[in-house]
Length: 125
Ligand SMILES: [Zn+2]
Image 1 (tube, protein in one colour):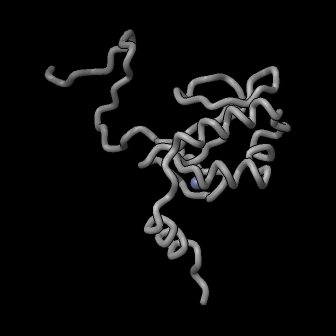
Image 2 (image 1 turned 180 degrees about the horizontal axis):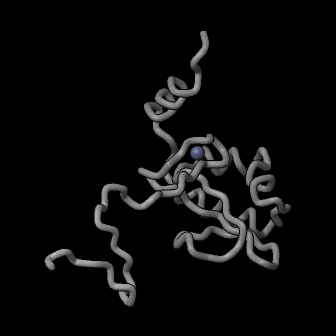
Image 3 (image 1 turned 90 degrees about the horizontal axis):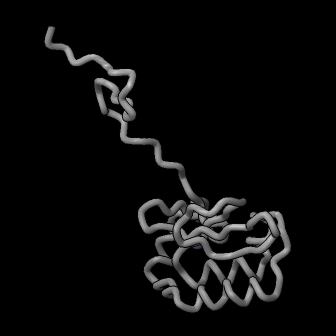
């Protein structure tokens, strides 16, 4: 008997083959619709009281929406109320100011990234 069997008491359930990496949920920027697993999106969360704030840990309870780490996306999401739609709540002036202050710390998008995005979104001629 050499076969290591599953121990039911084990806290970590190990399958025999680990061929599939853990499923990573796709996160989509609400502003530009880019899925950003690689670069890392920033989560914005609406808490139980309806306050909207940046959730850098990604662990706060509440309804979340994701935005790229790029000022452009934050500006767009706030201006077009995309974020409000995504979170299904109006964002107060205070919260908006806080979000904008956070966005100001983010890099702007490079021209190259914008081009890449255009290439990937415009498929028809
Ligand atoms: Zn974006």
